[in-house]
Every structure is written in C-alpha cells, then in structure tokens.
Amino acid sequence: MSPKMFLFTVLVGYQLFSIAGAQMVISTLDPSRYPYIVRLRPSVTSTFTGVGLIVSSRFILAQKTFSFSNIPATGIEITEQTGKIQFAAVKQSIVGDKYAYLKVCRKFNGATYPMTSSRFSSLASDNPNTTMLFFNTTSPVLQEVSPFTVMSASNCTTFAWAPSSGELICIYRNLTPGSCLFFTDDPRNYYQAPVLVINGHPHGFLSGYSCSSDTITSTWYFYNFGYDRAALIQEIPEVTIQ
Image 1 (cartoon, one colour):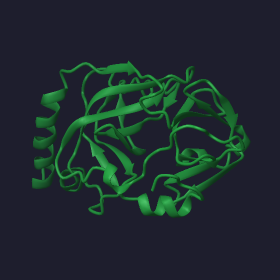
Image 2 (cartoon, helix red, strand yellow; image 1 turned 90 degrees about the horizontal axis):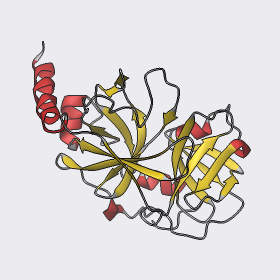
Image 3 (cartoon, helix red, strand yellow; image 1 turned 180 degrees about the vertical axis):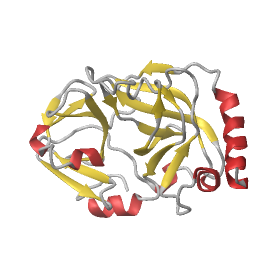
C-alpha cells in the first residue's frame, strides 16, 4: 500500500468512527425553510426525482440530468412545495455540461436562491454541519437527511483525489447500514437525487457516488456552486440574487 493510500485509510477511518454508529435521520421540512426549492421529475420515468433551485422568476438551476436529450423540456414536471405544478418550456446545458437551467412560462412569485458569494463555505476545515435535501418520487414534500461530514478542500484533494481547484466538494462515507436508501436502493428501482447543504445553505449537486448493499461505501462528490458561481450567473439568463 502506498503512503497516500495509507493516509487516506487512516483519515477516513477516523471520520467514519465518529459517524458510522449514528442512524441516518430523515426529517420532513416546512416549505418556509427552503422556499426556493422545487421538485423536478421527468415524464419519461416515474423513478427519478431531482432538486431545483429557483434563481429568478422564470429560471431554475438544475442538475445536468435535466439537459439530457431523451428528456424534452415540456416533459419536465416542476412542483413547488405548495403543490403547484407546471412544466418547463426551455432547458439548456450550462457550465461545461455540469448543470442545466430550466425556463418556465408561469412566473414564480416567492423567494429565490441566494447566490451571494458570502453564502458559500470556504471549506477551510472538515464540517459536520452538513445535510442533504431530496424529494421522494411520490411527494413534493422536501426531506432532509443527516448526518454527513464535508471534507476540507485540502483533504478532498489530498485524500479523495479531487481536483485542487475546489471544483468538487467531498463528503466522508457513512457506513451505517442503509445510508444510501434515501437516494437509491440496491436494485436501483429509484433515484432521488439530493442537493448538498452546508451551514444551512445549498452548495452542490451530486457528481459521483458509490452505494453497495444500500450503504455509502466511498467518498461522494458534488459540483461546487461556490466555485462555479460566476459562470452560473453569466450563463443563466436571469439570476435575481447575485
């Protein structure tokens, strides 16, 4: 085993010791907690849901899945937490195909996702104040799952081999049996794609994951909104809170 591999095993083992015995906790959130979050679901399948962030009255930031060619814009169902439903009119891949934006015809009247630079963590140290938000495939009620711990940017690069640029955010694995079930099951009958939340603010969409026997077995990676903030603001036609 190389020194780098040994260090990775020791560090992650320490982090796992602190959280592996903790049960995964899933909570139902009131719509007022994150009023700018909507559920996204493509009409081509009933087994996949994603999280969208309302960034202005007509535009939603979404994960790249919603720009795939087999998903027509008008087939993407957008459900507010209050239950209001509409469908996308336009979809577009952005920021090197890491994200997508959706445009709607009926304006949103509520809060929009804050993208001011001060809202994003510097990732200077490991942070256990971390959760994920997701929607069940059958309900527009927002769910929160914990516990998770985000790696510092340096640990993410050194021990999880992520780019040193800060493009990705890493979370330590959680070996609690069933820790993957909020996202998918072992036969992959459903996918409930989450958004990563650090210090109460959404920070990234899932980029890479590993689940084995319904358990998180390795580092998960998320595209970092803070790193891509300028590009997102430039490429989404309208962003209210910059």
